[in-house]
Length: 119
Image (cartoon, rainbow, N blue to C red; front, side):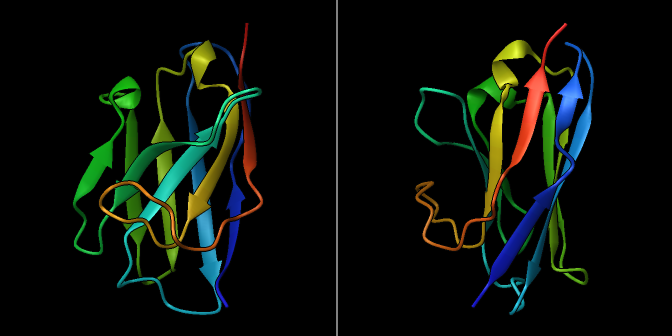
């Protein structure tokens, strides 16, 4: 059973930066495509980015050039560096342990970490 724990969220002004972490335990995820999703109040959960075992990445259009997804398989950890944050990035961010190339999330979810971008 995979357990995921997200951290790194917080409150930041527009233009600021945050780095989210997702630590996995219970099994090695080095062979899995992992991803970050977010859910804003009143909205459905949406894919933000994913990263393949080989390091190939995908980003939704709204975060391209601002967010960077990475992973450290030795630590069973995935990261999301978020720069130039905008108010519309405000959401609860979740990681998932098994993301299909289509973006569908098939794996375990973490509990989420809140990101608030506000002046």
